[in-house]
View 1 (tube, helix red, strand yellow):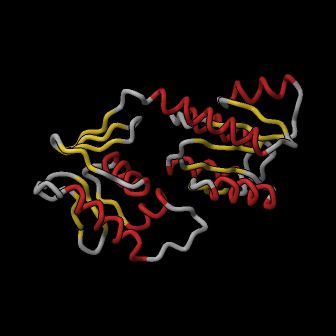
View 2 (cartoon, one colour; view 1 turned 90 degrees about the vertical axis):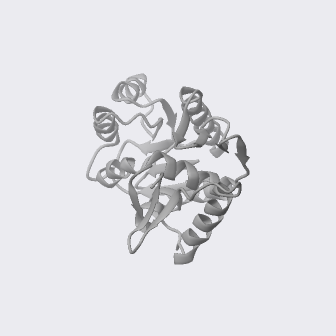
View 3 (tube, helix red, strand yellow; view 1 turned 135 degrees about the horizontal axis):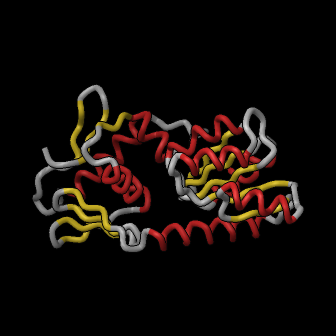
Amino acid sequence: MRILVVEDDERLADIIRRAFFEQGHVVDVAADGLDGERCFAGGYDVAIVDVNLPRRDGLQVIRNVRAAGDVTPVLVLTSRDTVEDVIAGLDAGADDYLRKPFAFGELEARVRALARRRIRSLEDEVLAVADVRFDVRARRAMRGGREIPLTARETAFLEYFMRNAGATLTRTMIEDALFDRRSEVVSNVIDVYVRRLRAKLCAGGEPQILHTVRGVGYRFGPR
C-alpha cells in the first residue's frame, strides 16, 4: 500500500512513517500543505492529512484535490475536536477523521478500512494490455491462459506499468511511484525488477511486452 502523510510535526510524521514502513508499506511524507497537495499527483492508496499546516491549510488541500477529481481516500488527523470541526473536515471531502492524541492501532485500523473501501470500489477492475490481464482485487496476473507467479514487489511494478501502458516511464517516475521518497534507490534495483518481470511475462514464449526506451526508461505495451 502507498500512503501519503501530510504532517508538519516532524517527530509525529516520522513515527507514522516508520510504523507503516515496517509493515511493508511505502510511505511518503510532506511537511506542508502546498507540498502535500502536489504529492497527490503521485497516486496513493490512502492519504493522512493534518489540518493545521504551513503554507496551505489541510482542509483547503483536500478541497483542491477533490475539485481536481482526485478520489484518494483521505483521513484527517488533527487536534481540533468539536462537532463543527468534524463536519468541516468531512464537508471538505475527507473520508474519515481522527483526533490527536491517538493510539497508533486505531490509526492503522482506520487506514486499513479506507484501503479496503478503495479496493471494493475497484473490485471489478481488470487491467488489460494486449494479452496481459491483471485483476486489481485478486492481485492476479495472466497472459493468455497462463497465470504469472509474481512477488508483491513484482506485482506493484506490473500494475504501475499497465496503468501507464504506452507511456515512456523514466527511472525517476518509477522511483517516485514505487519507492519511499526517503529511501536511497540503488540504480540497478529497478533493472533487477524489470528483468525479473520480463522473464516471467515471456516464460511461455510470448513476445516481449516491456520495452527499454534507450537513455530514457521503459514502455509497457506491444510494439
